[in-house]
Image (tube, rainbow, N blue to C red):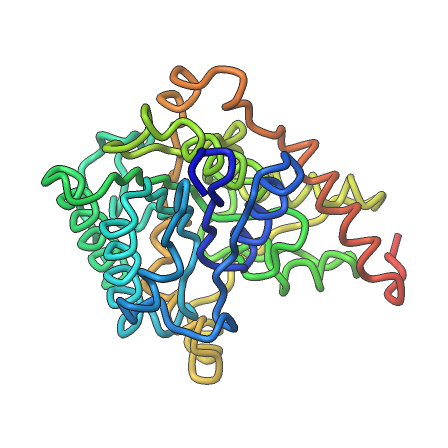
Length: 315
């Protein structure tokens, strides 16, 4: 393969975002290679990672270990991916989150202080710095793309609008929040995250060496978005949102490892948590348009109805 058009986009990870990235690239007629856990290797293995990315037009990194295994597996995985970027010479587009910023005092921009206040935040910040250092040294070409908490069709692993919420909302039950549901909190629509990663990969000459906040719709409170779900589902009565008591979370953490890891991240729902995507919008124009909350919730509800035909929605 010689021309860019013949070289594949290598998508690392086939989870909620990676699978969507691959689907969208394929729909565009682009060649795609997906590397998933079942691919017969481990991305923390440098030789496997190097082979997986050989010949790539760009590497879109969406791979992540199970949430409760981050502290032992995330750094080795990212070291392997960075090695793959160095050896393949392909631009590396990394999907990151907002943990490294810690507790914000204003809307988060790409220049907000990196001041983590959690173990996972410290881990994310350290990995991002390693990736940017490699770019500054000329060892790799790296762009870091950050998004907030996910929601959307096929998104079941999410802090707020994941499987537990979806299972409750179809029954007309209240939503749940880890903190104050009336505070503004940005939520990233999965389709926008995938589109943003693709834009950064296609525009790698402009995107590498930078941190980018992926397109996000207007910020509302968690409570407001839960009510949007209720209206989209056709409930006559507004859905309410309750704060999960600390004691309940601590008990759940004894049995669910992911909940245990979420405890240190509760600060994100205990103060305004707003993501500013103006840099992306000003740089990429029409390609940066975010899905409105109305449209995002409607698409999620349509998928929910179609995927659970045996569970009639309660009016």
